[in-house]
Length: 150
Length: 407
Image (cartoon, rainbow over all chains, first blue to last red; front, side, top):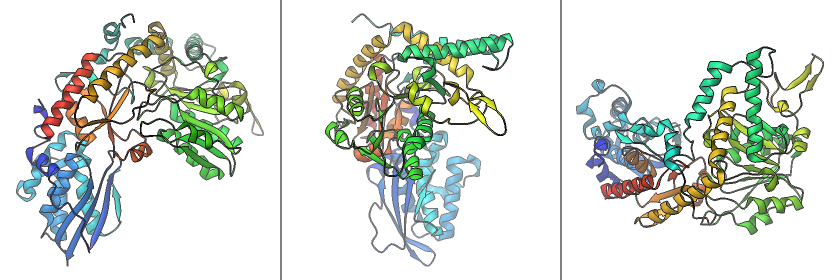
């Protein structure tokens, strides 16, 4: 029935939407940033625990569509243990995967995040997938305490 | 009722034959904008191919023809909403510009620090923000009348908010996010007692019901062409003549003047005083064609048919487990706003799109309404006279399937 959507809504996405990982408020977080997509009302708060420039823990709270929930859930899993530079490099790869050219994406680096590649074909949904990463970017740069995709 | 010629009407709308993702288009986003009948499309091509020039300027034949078409459309609008005179019909870009025009002219001339403007909690951003801007400039206060959980205006509370300081009441006729039709006649009767002008935002109401501004006795009525099967880029500001006469002009420029010297400028008469610059000529002509088309079908017939569609959709929707209708007013237009348990409206929108069904998912430019119902967004199916019960069946089947997929 929804055959056309199989690339967008992969089973992994449904799984993370139903059971988001790292969905909790973090006490004593070193970074706490709110992300907001005014277009659809998606709203999330990202928490990071840092040891020097290493992300030792990441968690989130908020509400959003399946794409944005899965994206932030997957992100919190993958960035744990990464340095800021590594996380920023991942963001760049993720951004390339969702908005840029397929051949420029390093599939090995992107790993599990590849399930979100399907949004490239849905311009209206790209921001759902990238909200988490823009929020992470702001958290790492420690510039603002609230970011918006618009 | 005699049967409504929906199939004949559908045949007049070329876009309804489009396939979306290889499926027949089911267009249920009419509250955002309506599709255009061939009569409207043709009227624009005809103008550009045979009768186009600038209006109100030239002595040459084409300019006279274009002016006739343009002013002819004004006459049609006047008749369509039963205004007293074409002087009361101002062409603008759309509802948003009309409200901003009133805020910047009537508002600045009549509203000052401490005065109050009264709106409702179900307004579109376009009937909130222009007033907030005016309040910021003047020190006036924006009062907001509350709604109940059905999405209806709480009339007693509304009435209590009318005070000696109220200088304008601006109310949506039909809510775009909820479908609620407000008791505008009652509001106007109440306002008249205190001599408070009433502005009705008719953007949603205009394609769904007959509008008679003299019967309503509203002071301003504003709407957009594109929700009335006409092109985007044109809208109408109706205002009672005496009010419009007393208002300062909006934008300065050509067409709105009678005489210009470097020392002094004399403004043109109504309606031109508010129409500076070359207007969207072809779009205005298209609006005239849309009104002819709708008049042939009959606004009463359209209202009856759409009420039938809404009843059918509501009944079907109520049978779907986990679906909650947002906006259950007794008086309601053909809008079905809803949320599904644990499925975000954006996902609903994408999934239905893959079935060829176009709905709107989002806050519908009514964020305060979303906050009130404690939802980030809703999915909204909005119906027009060319929709069918079979399309509603397709929508409901799609919703049931996506609920299953989400598990």
